[in-house]
Length: 504
Image (cartoon, rainbow, N blue to C red):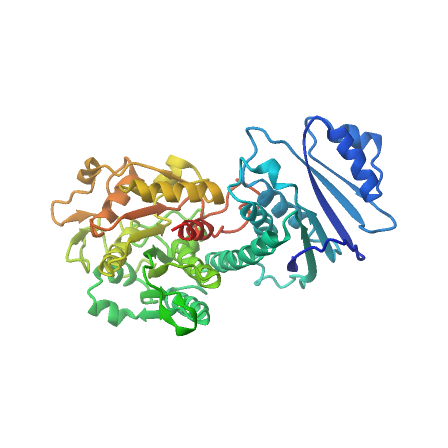
C-alpha cells in the first residue's frame, strides 16, 4: 500500500506528474449538463458511449485518461441520494478506491468533496461529513503484511482533499488521522497471531503505546491477580504456559499548564475481553476456523485503541481502560467442566463449558471496574456465537437496562456505522443461568445464548452504576459488509466509543 499523507488542498490546484483526481456528483435531473461542465472545467473528453452508460441507472463510475496529464486520470463517481444511501458511502467508496490503486505508480490523489448542503439530512455536521472521507482513505490503505517475505515497499502518496469549508476540513483531517491511527493499532493487535500476542506481550504492547501518550498503566501479573482473588481470570488462564495479566489504564485529561485534574469530568470505565487465543479449553472448539480465535481479544484491542484516540484528541472525559487477559488452552492444569470458581466479588461460578470463558474473566474485570465508582461502565467482548446468529455479522449486540446509555450508543453507532442493536436484558433470563451448586453457572443452555451471557455478566456489576455490554462477536471479524471489512479483523468499537465519549 502507500505511505499516505492527507492534506487540505489549496484554492489553486496544481496537478503534478502521476496524479489522479476524483470528482463526486449527485445524480439529478441536470446530470447530463453536469457531465458536460466537467469536460469543460477539467479539459477532458468522455466518449458518447461513456456518457450514455454513465447516465444510465446501472453505472455509477467512469474514468478518462489524459495523455498530457494534469491529472493523468480523472474518475467521476455518481451518487444516488435514495433510500439505499448511507453515511458509510464515502468511507466505503474511498476504501475500495485506494485498494484498486494499490499497484499504480501514483504520487498524488486529488479528491473533490461534494457540497455538504446536498447531504445535510444524512450527516449531522459538516466536519463529520468530511471526516468520513479521511476514514475511508485510511481504511483502504490498511494492510497486515509484515509476515510476507515478498511484501512491497510502501510508496509515498499525497492525498489532497478539497472542500467548501477549509477550516472544518483541516479539523476533520486532524481528527480523522488520530482516530484511524488508533483503529489501525487495534486492527494490528487483532490480526497478530497468537504466537506473538499472548497475555504478557499484549500487556507490553498496550502499555508501551499508551505510556507514550502519557496514559498511566498498571499491569498485574499472575501473583498480583491471585492476591486480588481474581479467581475467574486465574481459572481460565491456568491451562496455558502463558500466565494471565490484568491491565488497568487511566486516561485523565489535565487542565492547561497547571497540570491539574479538570473539575466535573465524567468518569467512564471501558472493559475489554482479552482472550489472546481461545481453543475452547477442555471443551475444545472444532478445528475449522479456530485460527480466527487469535482475535478473541478484540474487546481488549478496542479498549486500547479508544484510549489512544482519546488521548490524541484530548477528550474531556476521564477513562479507565480495563483488560483481563488470558489464553484459554487445554492441558492437565486447565479448568474443567464441573469446576466451581470463586471470583473476586465473592460470588461462585459453576463451569459448565470451558469455552464460555470470556464471561468468566470479565466477572473479575467488571467487579474491579465497579469498585472504581465510575459514572458508567461499558464492556466489549467477542462473547457469543449466539449473537452472530441473532444479528448477523454486521452489528454488535447491545445489552443495558439504562435507556439513556442505550440511546447514546445506538446513535453513535448509526453515525459511525459501527452499529449496535439492543437486545433484551429482562430478569426472566436469570433463571437460565441458575446453578444447583454455585451462585451462577457460566452457560445458560441452548436458547438466547447472547442474552444469558449478558445476564451472567450483570451479576458482577454494581447495580447503581449504568452499564452496557457490547457483544462484538460479529462485526469484529471479517465480513462482506463493505470494502474495509472483507480481509482483516476490523477494529470495530474504536470509532463507536470515541463518538460516544465525544458527546458526553
